[in-house]
Image (cartoon, rainbow, N blue to C red; front, side, top):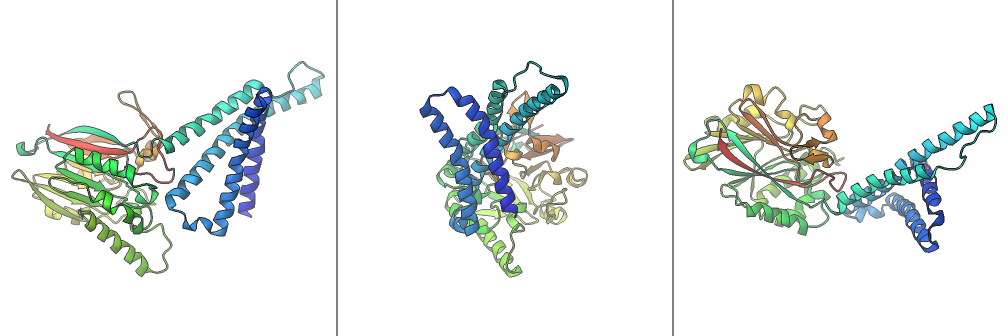
Length: 409
């Protein structure tokens, strides 16, 4: 029944939104009008074909990345048609009101036909999401942006000045459809010749096997003093219906093994002391911890902090930035100079013009959602993510490689 209702709604959108194209195209050359009409109606044909294939289980053998792209383009086209239909509805209500008034007051002079202006406006409004979201998929999925920040830390030891730290986050390897563009990201990372590289969670979307095709990509990441990683909320397999607890456990063990094969030191509520130029850097890694109730709280900062207590510089890896402001890190661990998080992706949608505007809808959910933040003498950096999830693209918020240079305040 739900499929039938969805099908009926989509058919209604197809027919209703088509009125704008048919009206505007009345005077087009026949070849152009035919071509546009065929292109328009190919979308519902593809959508119906996809739904039937999904019901028949045909798409089960498709890669998750390919499925997400097909779904996204179908959604984008129908979103555009929805906006076209809304504008046409406004025009039809206008016509209806004039006709009702004529029925009450007698004949009046007004155009009973569809407004050419409103039809054109409908197509323009519909073209905005169609163009921007399609561009975000085609152009921006792998358009990696290297963002640089100088972090001035109070009391930073002289021998640690100029330390170069790279952060990546939210790889979501199950969303990728091609390894070659991802290798370019690894090349960009290695070109920086970083002292330390940190990965702050969400290597996969749902299952550990999604990362298997990318082991020989990300194992090429190099850093002078090593690569360290933590888990994100998607890494635990909590969004999958497993046949048994043992199957979920095996999935996690495989993920741990993948981190080992990558050459990354996975920190699970533990810390590592990294000797650098006669000083110890305490890298503290907590499992996922969120202030939002719908995300898991596996993190145990008290346990993780232990070994790093005497370190000369403390850096915390915590996937969810809400951990920073959850009345834990700031008041109780004031000697943690820098916290690195990810998780938000910047919602993969927004507007960023340096010095002018920085906006995304995610700001209404997370106070700290992208970039560098400071509270007293403590810093938080929220990485915008290397991969993508759900919508297989980015609009305004590009995939990020963060380069942080530490200096004394």
